[in-house]
Image 1 (cartoon, rainbow, N blue to C red):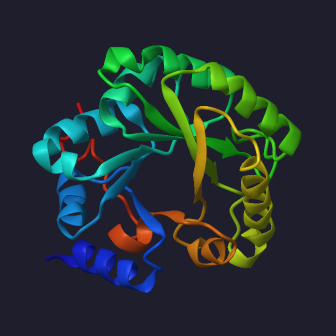
Image 2 (cartoon, rainbow, N blue to C red; image 1 turned 180 degrees about the vertical axis):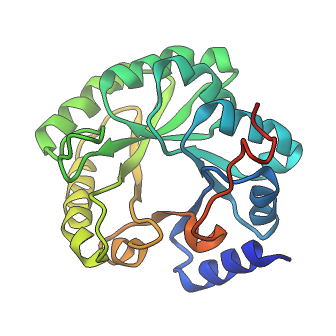
Length: 236
């Protein structure tokens, strides 16, 4: 086993078993993703549908199917069909409109249901998408989405503002956890809030302390510098 596999196993051993590790694989080569899956990773996260994730998934063949693939970037409308071909979970639903567009395409992708998370813009940053951290808006969205038959709302996801000191992210994780608990009181046919996805390589420990049960980690596993897939001849 190589360094990537060793890094994953060490991280997995250091994190409570109830916390899912989504290995963030943006700009990583198929061989690097293959190594982490062979080391035991069960969840892979990608930020870009096409061509990166689409070509990578096809290149990996049967190995790709050993993992659940999570979309963790901004999903453009014109990439939804390809996303549904690859991904098992979409973590970045930022509006009812986006949820409705996905819902319309699920059956055409040969699926009956796609699990999704609502993305929370916990820092109210203009540069980021996501629902505002307002419980009334979130409750209204959850109720409105009940009409959608082919999505299942399984959790919340937040990026939160990025800080050098992870302690500065704590209030945003705490806020998202509070919203998560309040939304559990809203009963709809297609919501079953179980997962709180927050925390990355520099902040996952704080996020777990604040209630996260899913973290998205890349550089601690792969190393700080991703390889350019273009330079390696993978994307053309």
